[in-house]
Length: 462
Image 1 (spheres, rainbow, N blue to C red):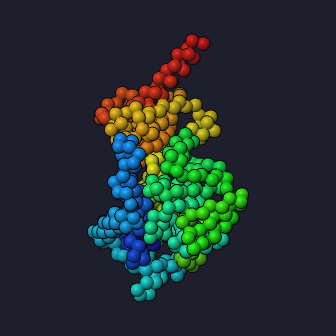
Image 2 (image 1 turned 180 degrees about the horizontal axis):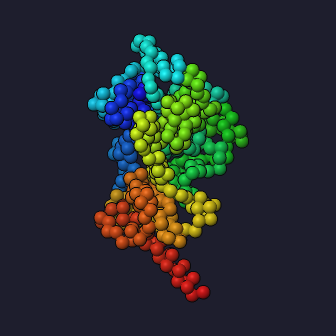
Image 3 (image 1 turned 180 degrees about the vertical axis):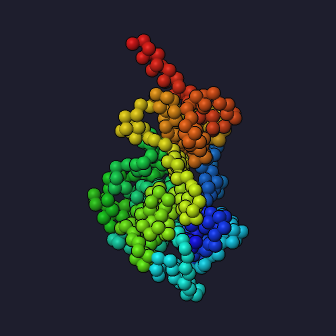
């Protein structure tokens, strides 16, 4: 098996095939082991977030006052030190895993010469043939043709980690996951951030109440939102940039970051030679086992599109490798959790209120607020909340939505209960450690149960 790309999907595909006794090689650029995820995407941005939270002392201000700071003047060097340390360690871990499993790393860039042959350009030109091929080349930030990027004043999300200073003002174009994550981080650093979004709301796939809570919190950090606005042009000036909106507004800023989605990295693969084609966003179509239209060629990770998460990419890689090796494998479950690392963070699994209402599924809502939990008071989180959506008919858990500290960790309790087909009776009767944020599940379950009990009582009186 030959794997193109060493990101989460490619790495797990290679290791899974190696565990099954296959001879495996991975093609990757010399300075990009771990792919975008490790080098410019998930790991750097999440590490940057932790550095911001620590250095600003943001999480402690509830306890020690709004003026509390760990460091008054935070520099890019302060932020980059922790980020580079983590990236270096993660690259070592991946190299070690590939080495232990006898996976050969072929440095360079691969392209199809025919359905079974890959030409690799790098330190030396070489051809490699393989019975099975996995495309895991990932994505790169989409760059509108009308925008002149200069890596300093007008940038994309990859270049944001290479800024030479923390900007005083910033415009973020696009209120998707990446745009809002970076907007919240720089707002926490004290940057005056303006978010421009052509749609009428941000994070449309998230629960509306949770998004409103995040928006309120970001406004408290002096973030300005311009919804329903289109960028007409960005003009670079000696001291920054001027963003011109179609409505006539002009927004001056030190830096403009475009977050206009991502494009599949397939342009250099010469897919035609393999009998394949990508869509206009560079994505490759696959079946339930991640096989392409050419049966021995698979594609996994962001290059196949939604949900484009590191966690799902890993599972896709494993499933594709097992199928390619003729091993029985279950399809991925329909319950992947979504984690958004804003400040504060958001995570959810299952259905939203809008989806259940649209599908005419009766449900009850149970809510727990961190400010009512002892652990919430201890950590100084008064804004967090956990919301359970419960079937009114059989008390099954239909959705979990969390906002606040530890949201991306907490969501897995609900995910596990839903995966096992459990009801909130378990949460009502379970004993949780005290004081913890996890006990928010019991509080929210009791809230939902009490509401359903009132409805049942009134129904019985009719």
